[in-house]
Length: 183
Image (cartoon, rainbow, N blue to C red; front, side, top):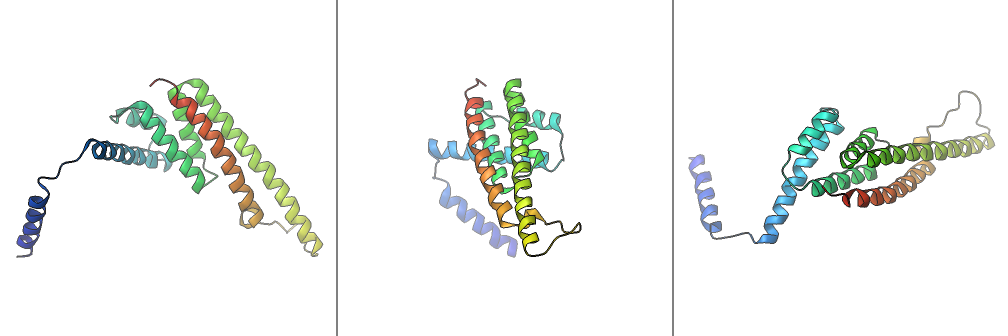
């Protein structure tokens, strides 16, 4: 009896929507959303270590769609990933993969961005750690056992956000250069 009610509701909905048609813009949006969902799925599998570089590239190339559009979507997804987490090796690996796919110079540039970002974070962390230790010492908190968890201090979170914002700007320029390469 419940099945009959559900079926009736589905049939009713189908009757009401049978004359609705999507315009070209809606079709494009639906296709882009489908492409983005498929790319998110392979990106997530790569980020979680479920697939390696070769499988990622095979899956990436196997998805129907304009290669340039696929690159753009994946780079945008990676940039969003950096906004959520600044210390993610796999995101850099993804950028190197996309860069290599566009041309080896782009892959090398992605590696240089990674190295520069890591160095900037290390330098900022060292400065913040010293400042924290100096403040603790001024409060008579010192000794070999005192090791502040820098990641939990506001100064570090602010510095990390600033560094990530700086990286985002560099990544946007890198993305523009990659997208200028013919697919």
